Image (cartoon, rainbow, N blue to C red; front, side, top):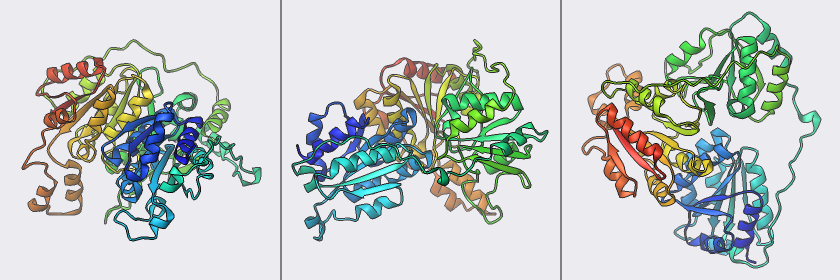
Length: 512
């Protein structure tokens, strides 16, 4: 068989089930080979940033890598912003990027570029396959690298893809580090903190925010009285009734500091020290209180579950403090405001939903309102590059296999990747997208006001989304997604109920 088919068969044999594709001419042999490998589902995307964001959503929900298929260096470059987000989330992603044959790379061609240079800043594993025979093995190694929570990029020259002599390869074994290379964990230091009388918080990330990790963190909090806190950039958090409550640090640094100020000790589990996104002339972006103690129990790459088990076993076990109470949240009444919108969403959120959160300014209070909603998953923007919400929803919906998905997006960030609506419609995905339409990059207005004592109207005007205003209902319908603009809470509730009950995508524009 040719290299293209051997590559796809290798990906499928290594557990890759989905490929989000925006191919070009240099990838046509891979597209042709797809008909021979039906177990690898190809999902077309109209923009590379949609493909990479969708792969991020799929990987966050399954813990397994999805693949992307991208066209040469420019196509890869279009997808880098959401690869940045995926890398910060620790999501497994395999990028297959077309490349010219070596003899064609030597020529001055319109699409000639240095694929490896483009990929290097956002890839943890990077390789160009030089022969058809080596291509399947390279593909298997890319999957193994991705499964460690990494971004893997494999460049495939066209002649390597069309060449004959490829044979599918198996997943390489996991490399176990030597014992002398493993640093000892400060479990005793963490236990001493938990047993002290000082106010203590567990700062949680990665595997500590879902599944067994979250259960163990809840047991530790119950036994010690410690608080559970996550950084603002979170990849995935299981929450709702019956689950340990984890407070998420607010984006605004003043609010984050206020939340952290009461604590004198912080144990970092599966994450690193949180900082504000940006340094300012009068603010160094440090969030933890001055003089507070830190214990880095484990970073994102360590054995989070094993260390949580050791902590939990060393503390007195209490009865499960998180019963699934049959609480019912009632939708609020009144005008459309951020608070009433948050209360409506919290009351109507269906059980087992997946919430994608890029509401930025207008949607900031929704997560807190949903603390006692039906059990659900919450996925956030991990790298700060906006335009991730709708692509992330695609991958989450495919991974969730008919779980309802609620996608919360600001209007400005939504415009980065609105092509994702087309893929939702084509694949019939159960995604209800809520657009908070305040007709502005409101966050940038806030940030500008922080750095200028006299904000200029001419600069503020650059952050407005008017002249013309965006019409999200028309944009959605143009992509094949039914859209509706709501004007009161009753209409919002009706639109949400219809979206959650439907089998395909829908969009709700909420003017603010």
